Image 1 (cartoon, rainbow over the protein chains, first blue to last red):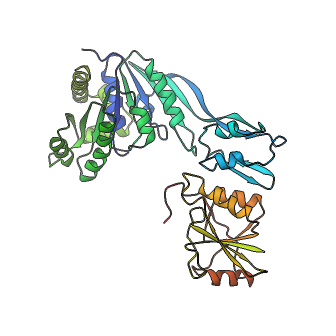
Image 2: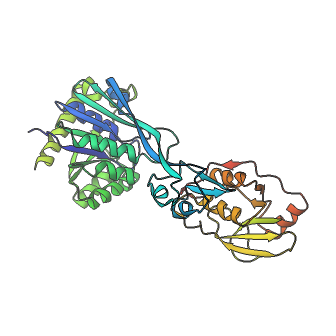
Image 3: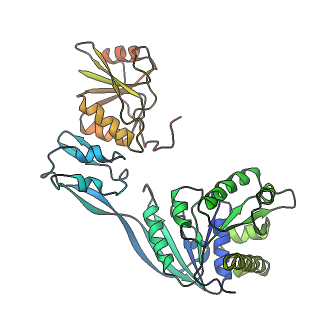
Amino acid sequence: MVLSNKKIAVLSGKGGTGKTLVSVNLAASAKDAVYIDCDVEEPNGHLFLKPKDIESEPISIKIPSVDKSLCDGCRKCVDFCKFNALAYIYNRLIVFEEVCHSCGGCALFCPKNALSEKEKTIGEVQKGVSENVSVITGILNTGEASGTPIIKKLMNEASTLKEPTFIDCPPGSACIVMDSIKDADYCVLVAEPTLFGVHNLNMVYELVKLFNKPHGVILNKCLESENPAEKFCIEKGIKILGKIPFDNQLGILNSNAKVAVRENEEYKDIFSTLLQKITKEVLV
Amino acid sequence: MKIAIPVDDKSILTSVCMSFGRTPYFLIYDTESKESVFLDNSAVASQGGAGIKAAQTIVDNKVSVLLTPRCGQNAAEVLKAANIEIYKTMNDCIKDNINAFIEGKLTMLKEIHAGFHNHGAK
C-alpha cells in the first residue's frame, strides 16, 4: 500500500504536544515524502530535517498607498475599512499597514483614484531536501499580523505534489489551522496524557468534526499510569493510531535536533507502524 | 480648550474607562464654556483598529487634550499627527482629573503600549 499524493495534517490543541516530532518522523519513515511546516510563526521542523539546497521565495501582500495630490479627504476609504486601517488627520490620510487585511476595498471605493496597492513582504517560503524528504517551510516575519497568505501559498504548493505530504500545522484551532487542514485527506491529532491534554485534544477534535475530516489520535508522552487522553478517545469512539512512550532517549534525540527514526531502530519501528496504520486509514 | 476622557457611562459621576479604544463613551469637556458632552465611541465593537477609530473621533471633535489611563501605539500615532496632547489620569474620578489637569497637576502619558489587539485588557 502506498500513500501517493495524500495529504496528512498533524495537529494538536497547543504547542509542545509533539506535532513536529510526529510529522517529521512520519515523513522520514515514508519512502519519498514532503514535509510542510505551516507553523509559520515558529517553524522548527527544519531544525530536525536540516534541509540542503535551500531555495527561498518572498511572500508579499498588497496594502494601500496614497497619492496625496489626488486625495480630497472625502473619507470614503476611512468609513469603508472595517478594520480601521485608515485615518484622516489634518488633510492627511494615514495608513496603518499592520492593521490592513489587504481586501483592496479602499482602493476600489476611492472616487479620486488616490489609492493604489503596493506590495509588502511579510515572510518567505523555503524549499530544500533532507534525504528522502522534500522540506517546505513557511516563515512569517516577526511582528506581522497574519500568516494566512503564507499558509495559502504552502497549500497551493501542496495541491500539486505527487508524494505523500505531511503538514505540520500551527498550534491551536484558529483560522490558520483551518487553512492548513482544509485540503487534507486525513488528520492526525496528537495528545498528551493529562487533563489539560484532553482539553486541547477536544479543541482540535471539534475542529476536524466540523470539517468532516477522517481522523485518528496519536497518544504522545505515554507513561505507565492512567491516560486521560486515551480514556477520552475510548469514550468518544475516536480511533487511536498508536502510542509514543515518554522516555529519556527520545528526549535526548529531540533536544539534539535529531530525527528519531534516522537514529534509533526502536523509533524506526514505532513510526513505520504508525505510518502503516495511517496509510490503511487513508486508503480505506 | 476641549478635553476628552474615556468614560464608562454618560454621567459626570461615572468613572474613567481603563481602555481608550474600547471605551463605551467619551466625555468632551470644554474648559471655557464648562460644558460637558458625552459622545458614543463608535469604535467600541470594532473588529480591529479600535484605537485608530476612537482617536479619529477625538480628532474630529477638535479636542486639544486627552486624559486617559493608557493609550496604544496606533491611537497615539493618530493623536500625535493631530497635535493632541495625552495626559495620564491620576484616579477613576472624572472631576478630580479635570481639576488636576486645569491646575497643571497631571503628567504627560509617556508609556505608550503596543496595543492589546483583541487579546483583552486586564
